[in-house]
Amino acid sequence: MLKVSALYIYPVKSLGGIELQQAEVTDRGLKYDRRWLLVDAENRFMTQRDFAPMALLKVAITPDGLQVTHTPDAATITVPFEPQTDDKFDVTIWESVCPAIRVSDEVDAWFSRILNMPCKLVHMPEDTHRKVDIRYAHSGEITTFADDYPFLLIGEESLNDLNSRLVEPLPMNRFRPNIVFSGGEPYAEDIINKFTINHIRFQGVKLCARCVMTTIDQETGVKNKEPLKTLAGYRRKGQKILFGQNVIHKGTGIISVGDELTNISLHNEERFLV
Image (cartoon, rainbow, N blue to C red):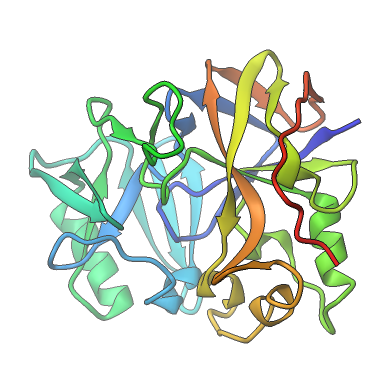
């Protein structure tokens, strides 16, 4: 039996995540997940891949908005749920372009100071419908400022297996999943096709190729060689190192830790195990 064991959202793309006991599934993913985005002077997305100190910015949800804290000096700012400007423009995430609204001058100035470079924080409004990678879409599914898909699914046993191969075990936050499940064998997520959680339908569409972000300690912002060095030895396909599966969905509602993954069907994806 597979059960949801953890749920995570990342309100500002590439900043700290928030672990939840219960989450609302919206038309484009979990509520608040990656609805905000930092962009550079050319309105291109910023992530820890290029700016590792972003890991030191932690996010909490408060009644007034997002509270962002810079852990080295405890500096904080509250990002309102609704933008305070009408400054709407296109932003770029990889090859995808979509409209966004700048939050405020105050917020821009704070992030620019903390990260020591000019940047802006933008929000995705409800009327922005950014489609998932069309090569894997089924019915025009949409997502937020996530890389390409609304959910990332990882099994606890997959991380346990990886950690058994490492000198120092790593926490799940290195991999930034949305849904973590318990039960099953290591890498069971590789071959999961369709499943439901609390009557909401999900479908695995593409194994997740991992990048340098997984090597960044989320507490210190320091890069290392692991886990990519070890994963490359047994989870490589061509030039890609795979861990977790990207998921799309149909339907809205509430999912909770402890919910069962049901109505599971499998596909023929290779598992890349040794």
